[in-house]
Image (tube, rainbow, N blue to C red; front, top):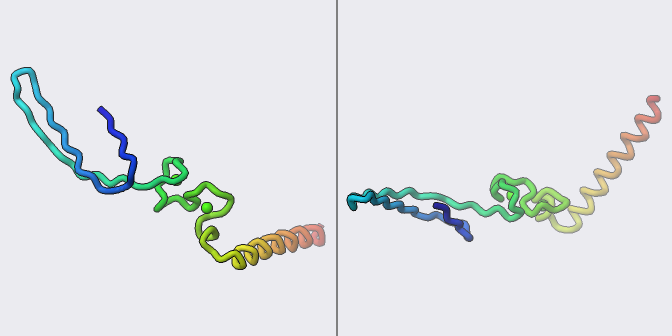
Amino acid sequence: MTHKYLEPGTYIVTLTVRDVANNSDTDSITITVLRDTDKDGRPDITDSDDDNGLWPDYIDVMPQNALITNVIVVVLTVLIIIVLLKILK
Ligand SMILES: [Ca+2]
Ligand SMILES: [Ca+2]
């Protein structure tokens, strides 16, 4: 038996079984369903790129100017490394 929960949340799951003699037993558990936006099997709370976009989520929420600044810093760092590698040859 399977059931698919479409929304994150806390749910109480109750299962009742009955045999041919009409004896039954019931048990319940509480489960927590977490959101997984990009459906890669890692819930958003532990997924560093939960929208499966180009950037990690901490960059997604940065103001645009901060994002541009970070890109410039990365590009300049790569260029400096390339220049240093050429000098050291
Ligand atoms: Ca995910
Ligand atoms: Ca992202």
